[in-house]
Length: 393
Image 1 (tube, one colour):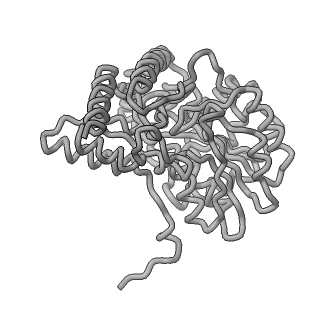
Image 2 (image 1 turned 90 degrees about the vertical axis):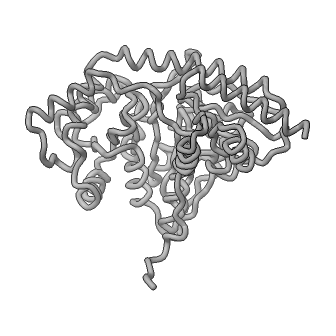
């Protein structure tokens, strides 16, 4: 029998992909499945971005690049950060990576070890806790509460930071809740974190371009006093409908950058060369497709919230960002994961149970409104029928 090193029994996964596999298996059997589980825009990558990758291939960009990314893309990313945050940004602190998860992996691997604590949002993206536990560090949940609009409460963050804290993970706009932390609370959070220069901060801002109702996204990158401890995670997957391209970027403190570069050299050598040229086109080209996509998500958001609140036993706070709703199903009498399993099996609607996003996710499910509006509304009708039939039974 083969024996692996300790730790692999602690590593988790992202259940959205398991649900996707089950949904696809049912669809292969001829079932009509509506997938509101996966966080993937249903829009194609804008044509000018695709053409930039094709041109890069035709121009001969077939080989390795620097592990940190091509200089042209790093410069464009640095300019984009500076434009959006108002803080000058050095391209030498930018790392081009194969998707957003890679930045999480690197940051948690750098700081996680037995005896230390890492704070992470709960409910939150499941890979945070998975990787924390894998390193042997102690995961400390930061409660993300419905009564607070699923935003971070700076005072709770401050209360949870201890002498053992090495990394704090924040995410706004948030997956799975759609919560957006208001500007005044972001400023409070930045002040609290800056007062602990021995603690690193990873700010996951992959949905930063997706906010609604006039609520701005305020990046932690906008606070110069944090730059020496801030790891900023962003990328192209959500904003430009490029999930399959596996292209992301991160901003690192100078003191950590070479560690990130070494991890890149050891793990993936470099990011796909043509995809990097597509990234340049994404950031420097027309942004009309982004605006149109976000407007479509906004329209779906309103429709899905109205429909969810009309379901028996369901209530749904209005999400302020990303493309997820996180309805409360406690009054239905269902536990979240059995509800999601039965709904897929019996009604052909794929959702993700809240506990897949953390201990505090029980009583909720995640609904992605990245699907077409007509399919979302049909899914709501199926859920309504499911709940009423089960109540009648």
